[in-house]
Image (cartoon, rainbow, N blue to C red; front, top):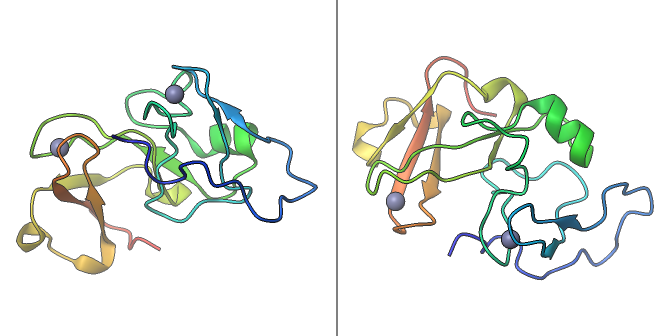
Length: 142
Ligand SMILES: [Zn+2]
Ligand SMILES: [Zn+2]
């Protein structure tokens, strides 16, 4: 299933300044603990119970804009993208990337097709478990 990244592990030391607390899944209503600060690149902001994107209701097909992640979760320098898996053609929602890397990317089915590994991110499809690669056209992925 899709919701494997943050399954049921609340932070050991919750930040007292944390304003968002648990996030209710827009699809199933389950309460999800999410990182208090900007998650690492490649983290997926999905429900640990059903796998739906936690930003689904306000994200368009291209993902959530940086201002949305700031408003919802107080995340700095993050956006999300929703790449389509090249193996099974299903969408993987809410993959975290740096804010400036929201646009200008494409997907490869295998590592040999990646032109420059420094600006590519490996991902595992939550539907078929296939590995694929998101590569940015110009900017290096930080
Ligand atoms: Zn859910
Ligand atoms: Zn797939």
